[in-house]
Length: 112
Length: 115
Image 1: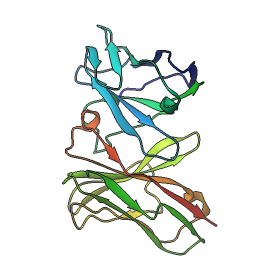
Image 2: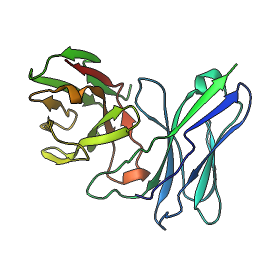
Image 3: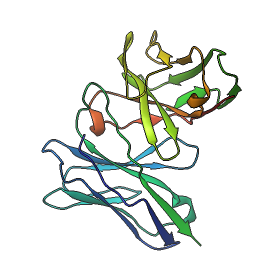
Image 4: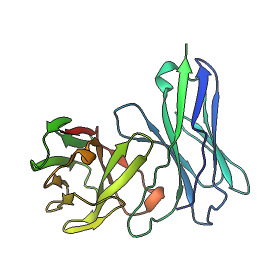
């Protein structure tokens, strides 16, 4: 799996748009970019996935530039309940079945 | 409701006393795995299973056993727990084997304390 780098933590206020960037300089041609969200004492939850350009769903948007060496998860108008850790994963089919490697993630704190 | 369930959710035990954490999914998923999460170390994979009777080691398998006798169940067994196995454990499943492209569904977690 391609190595990813994310900020350790971010702070925001309710109602603001939050952008979390993930660097993945060694991304391979077949690799996809996937983001998970984890609340305290809960398992990670799939948020969004993309390959190139822009993907949007009811929760977030994912922006991927043409070179695909980075990606940005955008959370519109965050609320207190968006306080969580966000993980960026990059890869395709895992090696030897080891499909997911979670790094440290980005701890987002949303303040009132 | 599609879900992954784990039991127990919380467990306090003593060193050397065998325990089993159960995991069950109702989505007919092929792939199941176990992770442990420790502060500063993220999630690390313990074991995984690609189908019934097919299991393999993840990153940190020492001290753990698993079995996959039925598609829906994937119990994690600690034959002789030690304090360094105190952790938060997650079971996960996915429909297929397409790696990061596959959406993983995680259970609610089991918090284990080994004294």
